[in-house]
Length: 126
Image: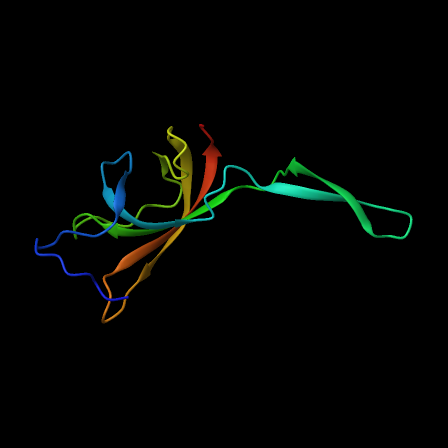
């Protein structure tokens, strides 16, 4: 994806900045897997083995939220593993606490450098 035209120099594209406790600011390009919980589907079968009913229960799997970020300033380093931050990733109106699991840098000749960051949900606030 090519960088969209922007007349202001060094102005990143994106929405709702993410700020770490150290004060580093990143522009969020995209968020994926933005669920509040991981659910399980439990199926019930009839005497022939066909599904007759189901129910949904909250699972115990850890919720992983994936971000694609741009650095607000070129001198900012990638978020460190284990960094906790607050962000309203699912637009519930209240920021939840997430923890950085790992980051990777995506570079291309035609695209702006971005950071892929996986984080786990520590405390959900809705």
